[in-house]
Image 1 (cartoon, rainbow, N blue to C red):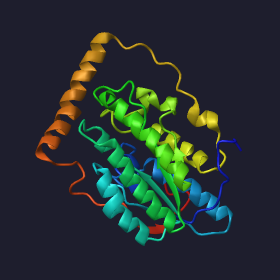
Image 2: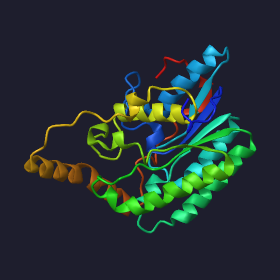
Image 3: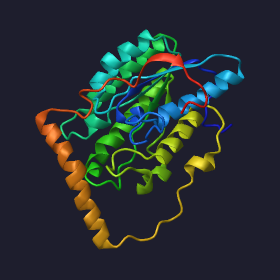
Image 4: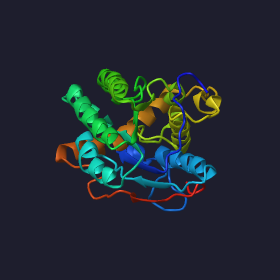
Length: 271
């Protein structure tokens, strides 16, 4: 085991809270049209396997909903999560807040720390995550300074309260745009797969690090004309609708509820 890893343990009640990233967009569920798998479901598969090998049952709930701001994640979502009596909670959020230039990152971190304290007081373990580094992302890279500040604050919270941190900022393999969906905001199935393995490693369980850390082979250069055309299509199909929703005070998840609201048995082959 790498010295950076904690000692592994067996968890039997895992609850995930968060936004579209933890809901699993854009990692389509082949068995349920319109629903997603995502890194948290994929992590649950692995945790279920370890629990089964130890002769224990395993249950999982995913309360994440796309578009949610951190106030909702550390508020109603966390209230519902703690009522399920988990022994492991992943709480990943703040990305939608950070996109807003007027956001108070220190306040965000304060809310997150209060949430982590609440979880730890129940005896459950906590898995947090830093943001990805948006260095090469169109538009979103303008928030890089805020994201970096938030990442540093996440590490501080973890150190003070014994939480575990999925370090997405340094996961350079997923900066490749082939890991991202057409909207350039959500990850493909391969991206989610790699994040799930990184999370499993963060929780102390062995993985083949080369499998998720190694970048994809270099891609062929794309002609500038195609790049410009792709940017224009992305702005028309994704950026403009997002701006319109912002102006109307709407969210893509306003009418949605959690895909897995209760801790239910989770077969290790389910996702």
